[in-house]
Image (cartoon, rainbow, N blue to C red; front, side):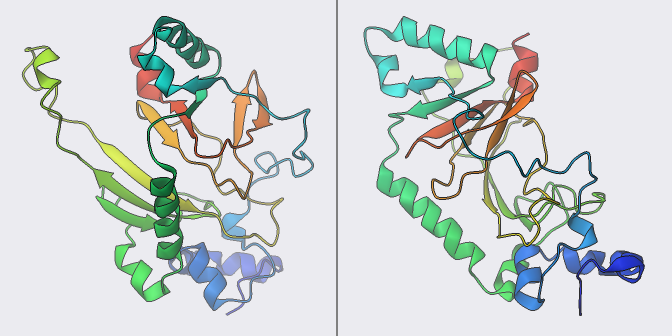
Length: 255
């Protein structure tokens, strides 16, 4: 089966291949000789990345760096002010000295890598088009409706850890159902090498819908961009740091 983008004939067959594409980019690359990006992944010209935007000092963004350990120090109020300003001015900051050991981070990265290296038959056990599934392996945010897919595969795990006994008594007593619903999720993204990176994106421009996102960058492959004052800028990773992103819910609730 040749899924390369080669004229009208391939274009007319794209719909027939939708189910095949939903198996993920890695499966596509494992089973096919991909030399061109299939139409299902090609963005419109207006949405395509600026492939000429190279990583250099002129388009790098230096986000505020928040030292978590300093929140316990005598200058706590200064750090809190810096944190508030970072959220207001950028909506992002880089978090260091967060207390998560380097070997834990390394094992988390390794576990993610090993999952995506599993055979397709094993990975596909967790494939789901149900966006609310507690465990979901997929390739696009909404594979049922998305006209163009992202050039990525992901594994999403819903997490609901037991609440600490130290905090619930501080919560408002009314309404009674205030604390009944909430969620924490872990998402592992895998972005395979692309034969035509100027035509597609691993993740399109977006904002996160939750309160906060803690993002662990791959230090070996740069590619994360943040929009600041209308311009997309590259973010260079700091080893063992997290990029913290203010989500839509926190933005709305803090207005």
